[in-house]
Length: 152
Image (tube, rainbow, N blue to C red):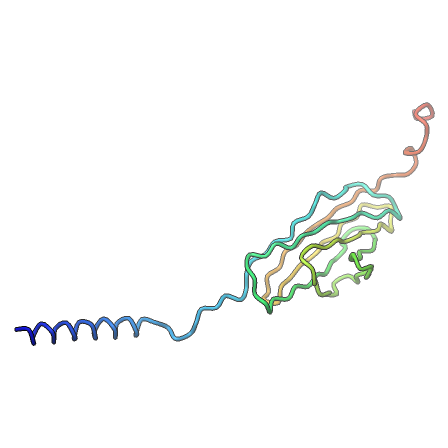
């Protein structure tokens, strides 16, 4: 009777082992792509020609993977201006530039007196993209510097 119970026990253990091993996948599930966001401090809405607006940005990663690379690019749909990074590099529209810091600043300089809109895209090398849109209204210089008594 003891032999039969030992045999049943061994067969049960072997069956359980075969079941567990066949359910396992030999490939490790390594996550490489993590979601991310780019947060910005509030940005001024009014700007005059020649004035520069500072855009403070922070890249918030959903996880860390050593081989993740980020790029930044922009497109200007309204108005005319220049966008540069905190190293002074002027961006060309739709060209990708490496984003090497998680905390960075962008500087937009107005070159027109019209309404201006720029879309900034931050992308990782796995295809995830975040779009940020900034709109600036022309703040006319005339009337700004006049004394209150001369305004009508």
